Length: 594
Image (cartoon, rainbow, N blue to C red; front, side, top):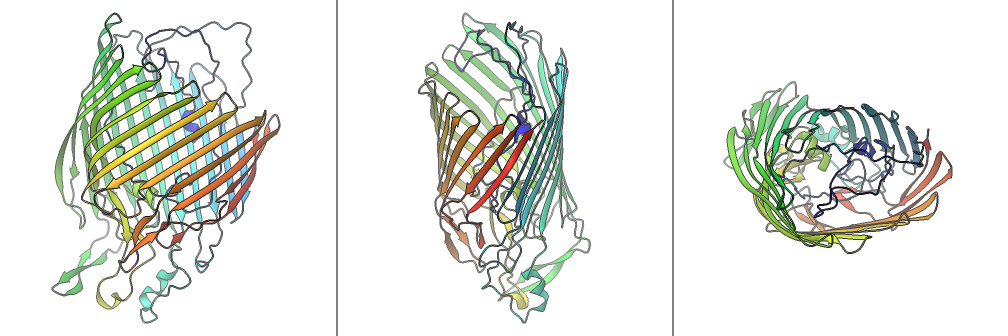
């Protein structure tokens, strides 16, 4: 989202990694915020709701504890005096509208105040939806939509920088994963309504308040604090509250440029609390196996309460000396559930991780070798789970576990091959526990044993699993003319992980043909995935090769037209079993700056 970059005043006094020079005479005139709009999302049903940049679920946990850097520079830099260079006029606001096949409207709005040294205000809104039909699945609606809003304000003071960010999102899908060949047994009248299920929608309201001091001297005590509140709502649950308090205090103990660049000792305290309340007013029965029979003998009351909490303490050390950089920390995690439910046990757990990141700049700017260890704990909330897979069962959704990266080790190379090319290669080994994945909900009791369930999913967890991961990134930029990117990821697991391809790759290329006219293309691919069907038999979902092209042209100073052609090969691929995506689709539209 373009708003994520608004007001980022990164006036860093440091050069690229490994440089020790303190001043660069090259001056670039920037503004705190320039409105920009995202490219329209393809109307495909992907785990990524906002767009389909990666049309496959990525169980790529990156929950490594890392030294926590402040957002804004802590040392004031005396501004350079610019002579004879006019500051260009900025368009503070912009609107983008588009429309495509499958009845897909798009609308985006950016608003920002003008330049100010003391405060900043910006707002963003986005809507995208699709109302088309998919061949072979036209008995049901295949609608989906997303609405997002974001308002941010910042205050810049001589001694601190403070910001308030308020976000809201609503996303919805229809569970259309019954093909025309599927039928509900006619003798089960009570299940007939589930042939055309109610739309699933999810809402998230979030507020983020941050405070960062603006230290006047390198030896001053520095601190940063963030308070993050999330409220998640669905159309079958009442509420899930998440409160995260994050803070850091640090102090430079030694700064002698003859020998040591920086020696810093700091700490991080993090508190997270999740409160999940079951919103089913009348409660519900759950099956219980008695011998060879399954009977409905346990009644779960409505408004069941489930609390989870996560406390992290992370003292850390940062050290720089010539070609060497070292970040080291001790991460202590204390987490657990303070209330019991049918699916989650009450209890307290502890995890300790030595966090080390060592970098050797072997050839300045060209070749850096890095190696390290890490680990961490992540809470699976309603918002997180529904962002991965929105086609969720409306009743069985209380299984909200913690995913643990108990220990990982990694090594790699990074650097710049030239002024235009940079690269990064990383191999890592992860010892995971309770990685999130999904399976169909199935009936297995009473008169419904011959019917295998709804067309929706429930989360479950893998237990212990080993993950070997290899990732490579390559970026190319030739002035303002050409931009290109390539990344590829290989994942190997020591046990079967459904809906998780072994290999994924993305290629993107943009060419600015002439001033105001540019063309771009992208390829997203992944290999076959394994899945279980409704009766529990293993199936293979074929891999995907999704090729898209587009162009935009600024025909007058304030107006730009665009066109996007997606899935040019018209592939029918599946992100989730029995949920095919749209085939070829397009969108055209207009952007206006004012």
